[in-house]
Image 1 (tube, one colour):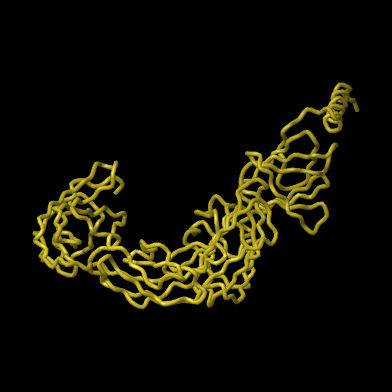
Image 2 (cartoon, one colour):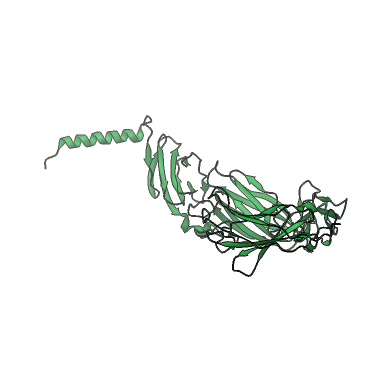
Length: 460
Protein backbone atom coordinates (compact mmCIF):
# COMPACT_ATOMS: atom_id res chain seq x y z
CA UNK A 1 0.00 0.00 0.00
CA UNK A 2 1.37 3.40 -0.95
CA UNK A 3 1.40 6.00 1.82
CA UNK A 4 1.00 9.75 1.10
CA UNK A 5 3.77 11.33 3.17
CA UNK A 6 2.42 14.83 2.48
CA UNK A 7 -0.94 14.04 4.10
CA UNK A 8 0.77 12.53 7.15
CA UNK A 9 2.88 15.64 7.62
CA UNK A 10 -0.16 17.90 7.28
CA UNK A 11 -2.13 15.85 9.85
CA UNK A 12 0.72 15.98 12.36
CA UNK A 13 1.00 19.72 11.96
CA UNK A 14 -2.75 20.13 12.57
CA UNK A 15 -2.57 17.99 15.68
CA UNK A 16 0.29 20.11 17.02
CA UNK A 17 -1.75 23.30 16.46
CA UNK A 18 -4.77 21.76 18.23
CA UNK A 19 -2.52 20.81 21.17
CA UNK A 20 -1.40 24.42 21.47
CA UNK A 21 -4.95 25.72 21.31
CA UNK A 22 -6.07 23.49 24.18
CA UNK A 23 -3.07 23.67 26.47
CA UNK A 24 -1.21 26.93 25.99
CA UNK A 25 -1.89 29.68 28.58
CA UNK A 26 -1.37 32.25 25.84
CA UNK A 27 -4.41 31.14 23.84
CA UNK A 28 -6.38 34.06 22.42
CA UNK A 29 -9.88 34.54 23.93
CA UNK A 30 -12.70 33.12 21.80
CA UNK A 31 -16.48 32.94 21.78
CA UNK A 32 -17.66 29.38 21.33
CA UNK A 33 -21.17 27.95 21.04
CA UNK A 34 -21.88 25.45 23.81
CA UNK A 35 -24.70 22.88 23.48
CA UNK A 36 -27.65 22.73 25.88
CA UNK A 37 -27.40 18.95 26.00
CA UNK A 38 -24.17 16.96 26.31
CA UNK A 39 -20.56 17.23 27.45
CA UNK A 40 -18.07 19.95 26.48
CA UNK A 41 -14.87 21.50 27.76
CA UNK A 42 -14.39 25.03 29.04
CA UNK A 43 -11.26 26.93 29.86
CA UNK A 44 -10.36 30.26 31.39
CA UNK A 45 -10.14 33.09 28.86
CA UNK A 46 -12.85 31.84 26.52
CA UNK A 47 -16.46 33.00 26.46
CA UNK A 48 -19.05 30.35 25.70
CA UNK A 49 -22.42 31.20 24.20
CA UNK A 50 -25.49 29.34 25.47
CA UNK A 51 -28.75 29.89 23.58
CA UNK A 52 -32.21 28.96 24.94
CA UNK A 53 -35.12 29.01 22.54
CA UNK A 54 -37.54 28.72 25.48
CA UNK A 55 -37.35 29.34 29.21
CA UNK A 56 -35.91 26.32 30.95
CA UNK A 57 -33.97 24.68 33.73
CA UNK A 58 -30.28 24.28 32.91
CA UNK A 59 -28.46 21.65 35.00
CA UNK A 60 -24.68 21.97 35.02
CA UNK A 61 -22.31 19.26 36.28
CA UNK A 62 -18.65 20.35 36.46
CA UNK A 63 -15.80 20.95 38.88
CA UNK A 64 -15.05 24.19 37.04
CA UNK A 65 -15.92 27.51 38.62
CA UNK A 66 -18.25 29.03 36.07
CA UNK A 67 -20.45 32.10 35.83
CA UNK A 68 -23.47 32.57 33.56
CA UNK A 69 -24.51 36.07 32.42
CA UNK A 70 -27.41 37.30 30.31
CA UNK A 71 -27.07 39.76 27.41
CA UNK A 72 -26.92 42.79 29.76
CA UNK A 73 -24.39 41.14 32.07
CA UNK A 74 -26.72 40.23 34.92
CA UNK A 75 -25.29 37.16 36.62
CA UNK A 76 -27.61 34.16 36.87
CA UNK A 77 -28.10 32.61 40.31
CA UNK A 78 -27.18 28.90 40.64
CA UNK A 79 -29.13 26.68 43.00
CA UNK A 80 -27.43 23.74 44.68
CA UNK A 81 -28.64 20.17 44.27
CA UNK A 82 -28.02 16.92 46.17
CA UNK A 83 -25.60 15.78 43.44
CA UNK A 84 -21.88 16.51 43.72
CA UNK A 85 -20.59 19.40 41.55
CA UNK A 86 -24.11 19.94 40.17
CA UNK A 87 -26.06 23.21 40.10
CA UNK A 88 -29.32 24.28 38.51
CA UNK A 89 -30.19 27.53 36.79
CA UNK A 90 -33.69 28.72 35.89
CA UNK A 91 -33.35 30.92 32.83
CA UNK A 92 -35.63 32.80 30.47
CA UNK A 93 -35.31 32.41 26.70
CA UNK A 94 -32.38 34.23 25.07
CA UNK A 95 -28.61 34.28 24.80
CA UNK A 96 -26.24 33.72 27.73
CA UNK A 97 -22.48 33.89 28.25
CA UNK A 98 -20.71 31.11 30.17
CA UNK A 99 -17.33 32.11 31.63
CA UNK A 100 -14.90 29.71 33.36
CA UNK A 101 -12.61 30.92 36.17
CA UNK A 102 -10.29 27.90 36.61
CA UNK A 103 -6.99 27.63 34.72
CA UNK A 104 -6.77 24.75 32.31
CA UNK A 105 -9.49 22.82 30.55
CA UNK A 106 -12.45 21.47 32.54
CA UNK A 107 -15.21 19.09 31.50
CA UNK A 108 -18.76 20.41 31.75
CA UNK A 109 -21.95 18.44 31.27
CA UNK A 110 -25.15 20.38 30.54
CA UNK A 111 -28.76 19.21 30.39
CA UNK A 112 -31.79 21.38 29.63
CA UNK A 113 -35.49 20.96 30.37
CA UNK A 114 -38.22 23.28 29.14
CA UNK A 115 -40.06 25.03 31.96
CA UNK A 116 -43.34 24.18 30.28
CA UNK A 117 -42.68 20.58 31.35
CA UNK A 118 -41.99 21.67 34.94
CA UNK A 119 -44.98 23.94 35.60
CA UNK A 120 -46.73 21.59 38.02
CA UNK A 121 -43.49 20.88 39.89
CA UNK A 122 -42.55 24.53 40.30
CA UNK A 123 -45.87 26.37 40.49
CA UNK A 124 -49.02 25.38 42.38
CA UNK A 125 -51.09 27.92 40.43
CA UNK A 126 -49.41 28.49 37.04
CA UNK A 127 -50.56 31.28 34.76
CA UNK A 128 -51.08 30.09 31.19
CA UNK A 129 -50.93 31.96 27.90
CA UNK A 130 -54.63 32.84 27.92
CA UNK A 131 -54.74 33.88 31.59
CA UNK A 132 -54.19 37.40 32.90
CA UNK A 133 -52.48 37.83 36.28
CA UNK A 134 -54.67 40.92 36.77
CA UNK A 135 -57.75 38.73 37.13
CA UNK A 136 -56.36 35.33 38.16
CA UNK A 137 -56.35 35.21 41.96
CA UNK A 138 -56.76 31.63 43.29
CA UNK A 139 -57.78 31.19 46.93
CA UNK A 140 -55.17 30.00 49.43
CA UNK A 141 -55.51 29.14 53.13
CA UNK A 142 -53.64 29.96 56.32
CA UNK A 143 -50.95 27.34 56.95
CA UNK A 144 -50.80 26.29 53.30
CA UNK A 145 -47.37 25.96 51.67
CA UNK A 146 -47.45 27.65 48.26
CA UNK A 147 -44.77 27.60 45.57
CA UNK A 148 -44.59 29.46 42.30
CA UNK A 149 -42.46 31.28 39.76
CA UNK A 150 -43.23 34.36 37.71
CA UNK A 151 -42.05 36.56 34.83
CA UNK A 152 -40.30 33.65 33.13
CA UNK A 153 -42.34 33.17 29.97
CA UNK A 154 -42.74 35.75 27.21
CA UNK A 155 -45.96 33.88 26.37
CA UNK A 156 -47.45 34.78 29.76
CA UNK A 157 -49.96 37.60 29.63
CA UNK A 158 -49.18 40.34 32.20
CA UNK A 159 -47.26 37.79 34.27
CA UNK A 160 -44.81 39.95 36.22
CA UNK A 161 -46.55 38.90 39.43
CA UNK A 162 -48.75 36.23 41.00
CA UNK A 163 -51.91 37.06 42.93
CA UNK A 164 -53.73 35.05 45.58
CA UNK A 165 -56.95 35.50 47.58
CA UNK A 166 -56.81 34.94 51.34
CA UNK A 167 -59.96 34.85 53.49
CA UNK A 168 -59.59 35.57 57.21
CA UNK A 169 -62.54 34.65 59.45
CA UNK A 170 -61.50 36.77 62.47
CA UNK A 171 -58.96 39.39 63.52
CA UNK A 172 -55.49 37.90 63.16
CA UNK A 173 -51.80 38.64 63.29
CA UNK A 174 -50.53 37.18 60.00
CA UNK A 175 -46.93 36.10 59.57
CA UNK A 176 -45.60 35.27 56.10
CA UNK A 177 -42.44 33.19 55.76
CA UNK A 178 -41.14 34.01 52.27
CA UNK A 179 -38.35 32.38 50.26
CA UNK A 180 -37.47 34.32 47.13
CA UNK A 181 -35.09 32.78 44.60
CA UNK A 182 -34.73 35.25 41.73
CA UNK A 183 -33.10 34.45 38.39
CA UNK A 184 -30.35 37.08 38.62
CA UNK A 185 -28.30 38.52 41.49
CA UNK A 186 -28.76 42.10 40.26
CA UNK A 187 -32.10 41.73 38.54
CA UNK A 188 -35.60 42.84 39.55
CA UNK A 189 -36.42 43.12 43.24
CA UNK A 190 -39.12 41.13 44.99
CA UNK A 191 -42.19 43.18 46.00
CA UNK A 192 -44.95 41.82 48.24
CA UNK A 193 -48.22 43.65 48.85
CA UNK A 194 -51.45 42.75 50.67
CA UNK A 195 -54.69 44.57 49.81
CA UNK A 196 -58.17 44.49 51.33
CA UNK A 197 -60.96 43.38 48.96
CA UNK A 198 -63.92 44.13 51.26
CA UNK A 199 -66.01 46.78 49.51
CA UNK A 200 -63.30 49.40 49.82
CA UNK A 201 -59.62 49.13 49.00
CA UNK A 202 -56.62 49.79 51.19
CA UNK A 203 -53.07 48.41 51.18
CA UNK A 204 -51.31 46.93 54.17
CA UNK A 205 -47.59 47.70 54.59
CA UNK A 206 -45.62 46.34 51.62
CA UNK A 207 -42.23 44.62 51.64
CA UNK A 208 -39.45 45.08 49.05
CA UNK A 209 -36.04 43.40 48.93
CA UNK A 210 -33.27 42.54 46.50
CA UNK A 211 -31.56 39.22 45.85
CA UNK A 212 -32.20 35.86 47.42
CA UNK A 213 -34.16 35.75 50.68
CA UNK A 214 -34.52 32.64 52.84
CA UNK A 215 -37.50 32.62 55.20
CA UNK A 216 -37.96 36.38 55.31
CA UNK A 217 -40.63 37.27 57.87
CA UNK A 218 -43.43 39.71 56.97
CA UNK A 219 -46.16 40.60 59.49
CA UNK A 220 -49.62 42.12 59.05
CA UNK A 221 -52.45 42.77 61.50
CA UNK A 222 -55.79 42.28 59.75
CA UNK A 223 -59.49 42.27 60.54
CA UNK A 224 -61.96 39.66 59.38
CA UNK A 225 -62.30 39.88 55.62
CA UNK A 226 -60.94 38.98 52.20
CA UNK A 227 -57.48 40.03 51.04
CA UNK A 228 -55.47 39.97 47.82
CA UNK A 229 -51.79 39.01 48.07
CA UNK A 230 -49.48 40.11 45.22
CA UNK A 231 -45.97 38.72 44.75
CA UNK A 232 -43.87 40.40 42.09
CA UNK A 233 -40.50 38.85 41.29
CA UNK A 234 -38.58 37.18 38.46
CA UNK A 235 -37.97 33.56 39.28
CA UNK A 236 -38.87 31.00 41.93
CA UNK A 237 -40.54 31.63 45.28
CA UNK A 238 -42.41 29.81 48.00
CA UNK A 239 -44.21 30.95 51.13
CA UNK A 240 -46.56 30.08 53.96
CA UNK A 241 -48.84 32.44 55.91
CA UNK A 242 -49.84 31.58 59.47
CA UNK A 243 -52.27 33.38 61.78
CA UNK A 244 -52.63 33.90 65.52
CA UNK A 245 -55.14 35.75 67.69
CA UNK A 246 -54.45 39.40 68.50
CA UNK A 247 -56.01 42.29 70.41
CA UNK A 248 -54.24 44.89 68.26
CA UNK A 249 -57.04 45.05 65.65
CA UNK A 250 -59.88 47.48 66.56
CA UNK A 251 -63.33 46.02 67.09
CA UNK A 252 -65.95 46.59 64.39
CA UNK A 253 -68.33 49.45 65.21
CA UNK A 254 -71.38 50.98 63.46
CA UNK A 255 -72.85 54.15 62.02
CA UNK A 256 -75.86 55.02 64.16
CA UNK A 257 -77.33 58.03 62.37
CA UNK A 258 -77.04 60.17 59.22
CA UNK A 259 -78.49 63.67 59.51
CA UNK A 260 -78.51 66.41 56.84
CA UNK A 261 -77.45 69.67 58.51
CA UNK A 262 -76.78 73.22 57.32
CA UNK A 263 -73.12 72.48 56.60
CA UNK A 264 -73.54 69.03 55.03
CA UNK A 265 -74.21 65.51 56.32
CA UNK A 266 -73.63 64.69 59.98
CA UNK A 267 -72.38 61.16 60.71
CA UNK A 268 -72.71 59.65 64.20
CA UNK A 269 -71.11 56.33 65.11
CA UNK A 270 -70.30 54.08 68.06
CA UNK A 271 -67.01 53.60 69.85
CA UNK A 272 -64.64 50.83 68.76
CA UNK A 273 -62.59 49.06 71.41
CA UNK A 274 -58.93 49.43 70.49
CA UNK A 275 -59.37 52.31 68.02
CA UNK A 276 -57.33 55.51 68.29
CA UNK A 277 -58.81 57.10 65.14
CA UNK A 278 -61.75 56.78 62.77
CA UNK A 279 -62.05 57.31 59.00
CA UNK A 280 -65.42 57.92 57.33
CA UNK A 281 -65.99 56.18 53.98
CA UNK A 282 -68.66 57.13 51.47
CA UNK A 283 -70.05 55.38 48.39
CA UNK A 284 -72.25 56.98 45.73
CA UNK A 285 -72.32 53.94 43.44
CA UNK A 286 -68.70 53.64 42.28
CA UNK A 287 -67.19 52.06 45.40
CA UNK A 288 -66.11 53.33 48.80
CA UNK A 289 -63.70 56.25 49.09
CA UNK A 290 -62.63 58.28 52.13
CA UNK A 291 -65.05 61.16 52.76
CA UNK A 292 -63.73 64.73 52.64
CA UNK A 293 -63.18 64.96 56.39
CA UNK A 294 -60.01 64.60 58.50
CA UNK A 295 -59.44 61.56 60.64
CA UNK A 296 -61.41 61.72 63.87
CA UNK A 297 -59.43 61.18 67.07
CA UNK A 298 -61.09 58.65 69.36
CA UNK A 299 -60.46 60.99 72.30
CA UNK A 300 -62.33 63.88 70.65
CA UNK A 301 -65.69 62.85 69.20
CA UNK A 302 -67.88 60.11 67.80
CA UNK A 303 -69.42 62.45 65.25
CA UNK A 304 -68.35 64.45 62.19
CA UNK A 305 -69.88 66.42 59.28
CA UNK A 306 -69.17 65.66 55.62
CA UNK A 307 -69.17 69.14 54.00
CA UNK A 308 -71.98 69.96 51.59
CA UNK A 309 -69.50 71.08 48.89
CA UNK A 310 -68.35 67.45 48.53
CA UNK A 311 -71.93 66.12 48.22
CA UNK A 312 -74.48 66.26 45.43
CA UNK A 313 -77.99 67.23 46.43
CA UNK A 314 -80.51 64.47 45.72
CA UNK A 315 -77.91 61.72 45.42
CA UNK A 316 -78.05 58.42 47.34
CA UNK A 317 -75.06 57.73 49.57
CA UNK A 318 -73.85 54.79 51.64
CA UNK A 319 -71.73 55.80 54.63
CA UNK A 320 -69.50 53.54 56.75
CA UNK A 321 -66.82 54.03 59.40
CA UNK A 322 -63.39 52.38 59.66
CA UNK A 323 -61.76 52.12 63.13
CA UNK A 324 -57.95 52.39 63.16
CA UNK A 325 -55.33 51.63 65.79
CA UNK A 326 -52.32 53.89 65.27
CA UNK A 327 -50.83 53.57 68.73
CA UNK A 328 -47.49 52.26 67.38
CA UNK A 329 -47.10 54.79 64.58
CA UNK A 330 -48.63 52.72 61.77
CA UNK A 331 -52.21 51.88 60.81
CA UNK A 332 -53.87 48.69 61.99
CA UNK A 333 -57.26 48.78 60.34
CA UNK A 334 -60.35 47.20 61.83
CA UNK A 335 -63.30 45.90 59.84
CA UNK A 336 -65.33 48.46 57.91
CA UNK A 337 -68.73 48.90 59.53
CA UNK A 338 -71.97 48.00 57.83
CA UNK A 339 -73.14 50.87 55.65
CA UNK A 340 -76.03 53.20 56.38
CA UNK A 341 -77.90 54.61 53.36
CA UNK A 342 -79.43 58.06 52.83
CA UNK A 343 -80.97 60.03 49.98
CA UNK A 344 -79.15 63.27 50.73
CA UNK A 345 -81.03 66.56 50.43
CA UNK A 346 -79.27 69.76 51.38
CA UNK A 347 -80.69 71.82 54.26
CA UNK A 348 -81.61 75.35 53.12
CA UNK A 349 -83.91 78.21 54.08
CA UNK A 350 -84.64 78.76 50.39
CA UNK A 351 -87.97 77.05 49.65
CA UNK A 352 -88.37 78.33 46.08
CA UNK A 353 -89.48 75.87 43.44
CA UNK A 354 -86.81 75.69 40.69
CA UNK A 355 -87.78 77.29 37.39
CA UNK A 356 -87.99 75.42 34.12
CA UNK A 357 -84.45 75.37 32.74
CA UNK A 358 -83.41 76.55 29.26
CA UNK A 359 -80.93 73.98 27.91
CA UNK A 360 -78.51 73.98 24.96
CA UNK A 361 -76.85 70.79 23.67
CA UNK A 362 -74.13 70.16 21.08
CA UNK A 363 -71.82 67.36 20.00
CA UNK A 364 -68.05 67.84 20.23
CA UNK A 365 -65.44 65.76 18.42
CA UNK A 366 -62.12 66.95 16.99
CA UNK A 367 -61.34 63.60 15.34
CA UNK A 368 -59.06 62.08 17.91
CA UNK A 369 -57.23 64.84 19.80
CA UNK A 370 -59.81 64.88 22.60
CA UNK A 371 -62.46 62.46 23.82
CA UNK A 372 -65.81 63.17 22.11
CA UNK A 373 -68.73 64.24 24.27
CA UNK A 374 -72.22 65.72 24.25
CA UNK A 375 -72.01 69.19 25.75
CA UNK A 376 -74.98 70.30 27.89
CA UNK A 377 -75.30 73.93 29.00
CA UNK A 378 -77.73 75.71 31.34
CA UNK A 379 -77.66 79.15 33.01
CA UNK A 380 -76.58 79.68 36.63
CA UNK A 381 -79.57 79.78 39.00
CA UNK A 382 -79.12 80.55 42.71
CA UNK A 383 -82.41 78.78 43.54
CA UNK A 384 -81.05 75.43 42.28
CA UNK A 385 -78.61 73.31 44.29
CA UNK A 386 -78.24 70.40 41.82
CA UNK A 387 -79.48 69.20 38.44
CA UNK A 388 -80.87 65.90 37.20
CA UNK A 389 -79.88 65.08 33.62
CA UNK A 390 -81.73 62.43 31.61
CA UNK A 391 -80.84 61.11 28.16
CA UNK A 392 -81.88 58.36 25.75
CA UNK A 393 -81.53 57.34 22.12
CA UNK A 394 -84.31 58.81 20.03
CA UNK A 395 -87.12 56.27 19.74
CA UNK A 396 -86.42 54.58 23.09
CA UNK A 397 -88.85 54.90 26.01
CA UNK A 398 -86.48 54.46 28.97
CA UNK A 399 -84.35 57.37 30.22
CA UNK A 400 -80.84 57.13 31.68
CA UNK A 401 -80.09 59.71 34.37
CA UNK A 402 -77.41 61.23 36.60
CA UNK A 403 -77.20 64.07 39.10
CA UNK A 404 -74.87 67.03 38.62
CA UNK A 405 -73.67 69.68 41.07
CA UNK A 406 -72.25 71.85 38.27
CA UNK A 407 -73.78 75.33 38.19
CA UNK A 408 -73.74 75.89 34.43
CA UNK A 409 -73.58 72.58 32.57
CA UNK A 410 -72.21 69.07 32.24
CA UNK A 411 -71.38 66.50 29.57
CA UNK A 412 -72.04 62.93 28.43
CA UNK A 413 -68.86 61.18 27.31
CA UNK A 414 -68.37 58.42 24.77
CA UNK A 415 -67.99 54.84 26.03
CA UNK A 416 -65.56 52.20 24.77
CA UNK A 417 -68.22 49.52 25.36
CA UNK A 418 -70.04 48.77 22.11
CA UNK A 419 -73.10 47.65 24.11
CA UNK A 420 -73.37 50.96 25.96
CA UNK A 421 -75.98 53.55 25.02
CA UNK A 422 -73.09 56.04 25.10
CA UNK A 423 -71.01 54.24 22.48
CA UNK A 424 -70.98 57.09 19.98
CA UNK A 425 -71.43 56.28 16.29
CA UNK A 426 -72.19 58.57 13.37
CA UNK A 427 -75.93 59.00 12.93
CA UNK A 428 -76.98 58.25 16.50
CA UNK A 429 -79.46 60.85 17.80
CA UNK A 430 -79.87 61.51 21.53
CA UNK A 431 -82.72 63.19 23.41
CA UNK A 432 -81.80 65.15 26.55
CA UNK A 433 -83.76 66.93 29.28
CA UNK A 434 -82.78 68.56 32.58
CA UNK A 435 -84.54 69.69 35.76
CA UNK A 436 -83.39 71.51 38.86
CA UNK A 437 -83.50 70.48 42.53
CA UNK A 438 -83.62 72.84 45.50
CA UNK A 439 -83.04 70.59 48.53
CA UNK A 440 -85.92 68.09 48.17
CA UNK A 441 -88.00 70.41 45.98
CA UNK A 442 -88.00 69.27 42.33
CA UNK A 443 -88.57 71.61 39.40
CA UNK A 444 -90.17 70.89 36.01
CA UNK A 445 -88.34 69.18 33.17
CA UNK A 446 -86.83 71.32 30.44
CA UNK A 447 -87.93 70.97 26.85
CA UNK A 448 -86.42 67.88 25.23
CA UNK A 449 -83.37 68.75 23.14
CA UNK A 450 -81.86 66.53 20.43
CA UNK A 451 -78.27 66.16 19.25
CA UNK A 452 -76.82 63.93 16.55
CA UNK A 453 -73.36 62.35 16.42
CA UNK A 454 -72.03 63.78 13.16
CA UNK A 455 -68.82 61.76 12.90
CA UNK A 456 -67.80 58.33 14.14
CA UNK A 457 -65.15 58.96 16.83
CA UNK A 458 -61.56 57.98 16.14
CA UNK A 459 -60.88 54.46 17.38
CA UNK A 460 -64.52 53.27 17.13
